[in-house]
Length: 496
Image 1 (cartoon, rainbow, N blue to C red):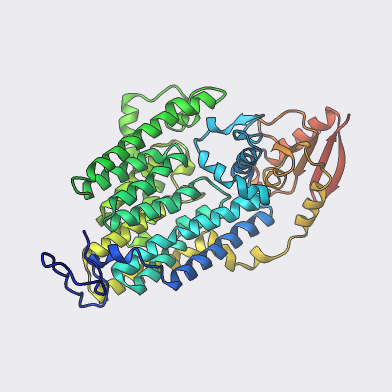
Image 2 (cartoon, rainbow, N blue to C red; image 1 turned 30 degrees about the vertical axis):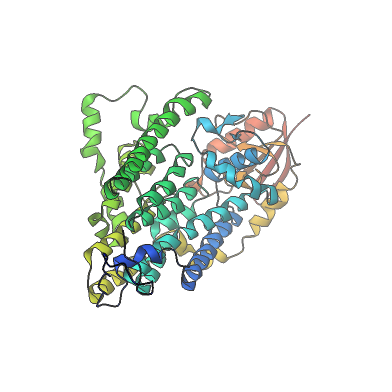
């Protein structure tokens, strides 16, 4: 139990007050009671500022036609399904594809009420901005109580502006946005000696995504280790629930909904489906976790914002399941620092950072050096990731092709079936049944085809320029006629 702060009534005779710190920072004994106080005004200022930054980045990216069918359109189709009162399906994944056979993310249903009010991809982007921004609050409050106001401010800003957060917010929307505040609250509670609260915050992670079950299991084990005898059972029960939840999702729920049966993403581990030999498995589980070198680079990048102090806290163990499946995967995007794959690791690492600083009990000068170092790394890495775009003039320059794209899209009637280029799909989800042009599993013979033929070669997907031209010619040979051809946007309509 933590001792109450100094302004509480006198302690009973059998207890004694903890001595005050000489460096002006709150004592660890004061943090439990302080946890019941209102957050300082500046914590809400930081959260509001981060929300504004994230929303601006996401919405401006979307407005510039830089969002994608994979994954923003898929998630919007899921939320649109829930808003319509049925289980989630995605035309982008395939005709009527049941998304509960792809990933187990029923938490997305929470966005349905917001989608009723504002049926748009922007609903998801703003929701993600809010979820990620508010995740800074428990980390700031913990750092403030344990280490002082300056630590709270630096931790909040360094975390909120960290490259892992920026990469996640800058690339569409993902269900992991729900995991970020849950992880921050859970680990902040665990670091402050409240294992029961840590478990209660962690258990909803089972509804975010199937991989979160093992993360819950580690949190449960840490809670059991830190709890007294009476609370140990709860931690062990959470660990069992985490493993059981992950197994149930992967072995039962996902295969039951997946049209092909089985769990699709096992192929990222199993390669071509023929299975790995024992030697290959041993290699993948040892040397393969640190080769190629991009995996080590990513690990260094993850720890750098915490000055590698995160490894001194047992809370860093919560990151191990995610790091293991990423390293074990054969999908190269899982290895690097791009996309959203480091989003859920940042609250874990910064919680471990605060815990390590709290455990070290450094002097004021030492704490100041650590905080300045963390802030310096954050500033150094900021320009190279998504938030750095906010400071580039090109990001704010108006592109006349955007207005042309929307004018052409407006010619497609509501409720129509459409195939469209990758970056046009998210702008049609809210009012059409849209799939991806050139994707082999897209719904065949749509009523409309819309293609942006001027996409830069390095950004083209899934077709290169030659294959795209061939596909358009084939569509015309099947009876599609050209309705519009403006600034590289080609709109075809099926002849009735």
